[in-house]
Amino acid sequence: MTTPTEALLIGGRAGVGKTSVAWEVSALLRARDMPHAVLEGDYLGQVHPAPADDPDRSRLTEANLAALWANLARTGCRRLVYTNTVSVLPETAGMFRRAMGEEVRIVRVLLTASDTTTLARLTGRERGSELEDEIRGSVRKARLLDERAPADAVRIATDGRSVPDLAREVVAATRWTGPDGR
Image 1: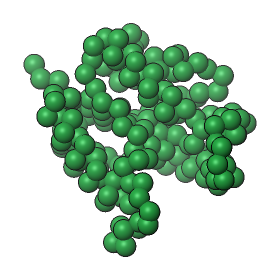
Image 2: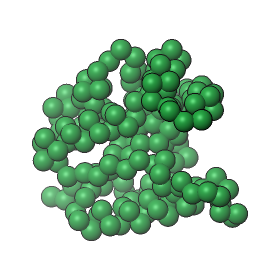
Image 3: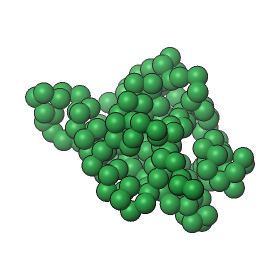
């Protein structure tokens, strides 16, 4: 039996723990010898200046996702762990279907955290000149995600929780390993 193509989309505001959780999800899957790939969606459109005909870089992001997925799929990979702030929004499904195939099963996980928690995390990690912009953007994206994330997105609060605990809950939401994510 062939493993279906599946995408775990981990979204959430800046400072919520998307990257840390994704890498821990990968560690859990590797421990079970479960083939998968991890992609940081933020990097797929990171070019300056934006193409004149693609100011939000969405076409570039999709083209890069399709190219990377084609290469990964050739290795037999059928599962993708993908992080990006807004990846859980309904309008992203088309991009994943076009890049990974119409039959892709999409699991959306929206990580959440309080303003206090995200401020502490962002202040601890940001060392450059863009901290204030990152904080403002995080607050704005939290509101957007709260308003627009679909009902089927599994919402997981990260405040005061360990990364391994969060990753187990995320893996459980995929049902890739079993009902408890183990």
